[in-house]
Amino acid sequence: MLFRSKTVVATLLGVCAYAANADQQISYQQGVNGYDGALSVIFDGGRHQSIDKTAHYFRYSGVNRRYNIEYFDLGDLNRQGRVLDAKLTFYRVGGWAYTTSDIDVRQILDPDNLGGGYASGWKLAEGFRTGANLESRDDSTGTDIKWRLSDPDSPEDLNADYFAGVLRSADEAPAFSPAQTDAVGSAYTVDVTSDVQCMQLGQCPNHGWALTHASDDANIQYFTGTSHHTEVQYRPQLTITFADDELEPLVLRSEPNGAAFSSTTQSVDLLLETNEISQCRFDRSPYASFEQMQYLLTASADGLTHQASWPNVAADNAYLLYARCQDEAGNTSQTPHVFSFSLNATDTDGGSNEGGSNEGGSNEGGSNEGGSNEGGSNEGGSNEGGSNEGGSNEGGSNEGGTEEPAPAGPGVTLNWQAPTLNVDNSALEGIAGYKIYYGTVQGSPDTVVTVTDPQLESLTLYNLANGEYYFSMKAFSSTGMESETSAEFYFQVSN
Image (cartoon, rainbow, N blue to C red):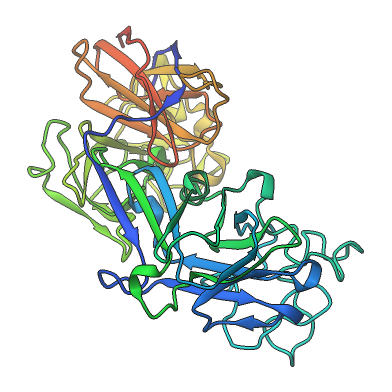
């Protein structure tokens, strides 16, 4: 089947943040409102691990330097709105500040993911050791390099500052400054927005923060509370502000998208992956609302993968099915996602016509009896009762019995150039794909195709009926941020 293809070009702007009408603030503090996901660990002299201390201790240097670890289980941050702000607060519980110092709050990065097997980044047990040439989690299993430098063979690592290389640089970390004159209950708040945003983007693990003193001469003992403190109000508190979720679910992956299947295919599997917990449905009409759609895509246990099967497909046919998804906040796809696929035409030779002979089939000696393809040649490009326009089957020979899939119906090829800058002219990173919107009414697209390969810069849309079409595009990131819509462009499809 012949098709006509036209190349058009879309210009995309950089990805930008969406505007939220209402923000959601969530506080994480051990024992408050049922939260039970905070952990506190102190690594003290000799690199021993203590898991029951009720207050932080800041003293000594080198291998004897004290590290106070605070960890918060934040669940799957991608299921929340975009992180707008994050503050970490500590409270004075008593103690003494004999020699004061800034207290650095350094995010634990663990670049080699050596703590990946543990929810908090390390194994918790009283007395366990950590780092360099001493054992860390189990004295019976030998050396553990969890807290070594990124290069554990580096000679600078042994008997040095054993957390070096796994913590964010002190120059990049926020800090607070306690003083002996501060009253019990005084709050020390640092901004950890960039740290939590890094976690949400999947660029940093959530292994918590290490608090330590900036001055080697510091001597600040039992000053601020840990998550084990007996008085709940003095435990560390992490407060995150999320943008209100007013975004429709984002399709990260879809199948099939323009695939051609064998003529013997009985059913076609459909798949969508979304960026948040959703319910997805589909229908044969692009105009059906989410509630009107007749068919359900079954969601996985985590609500992110959605699957269904479309039965009773027939050879020599093209199919378009339209899906919409709805998230837990009730946000629903405004334009339907398109599943597109086709089945090849039925082989006239039964699939085993070698050298013009189809044994056991209906094409004996190269002649298709009962049809209009005499002697195996489709004269003049006409195959009566079929749809092979302008094609030829010379000599009736089809070795192997299969044909290359052919595009079905007229198409339009779209080309675009990936944006490189955000709207504020900063460098653009993390494009996850593109959305192509189109329809037959200017300014009112009724169909969207999601491209989940960020490297792709061209796509052909087939099976378009004759008429006028208007196209536009957006780029999107893995966190759901989207660019502004490109300028709309027009093309006339004609067969």
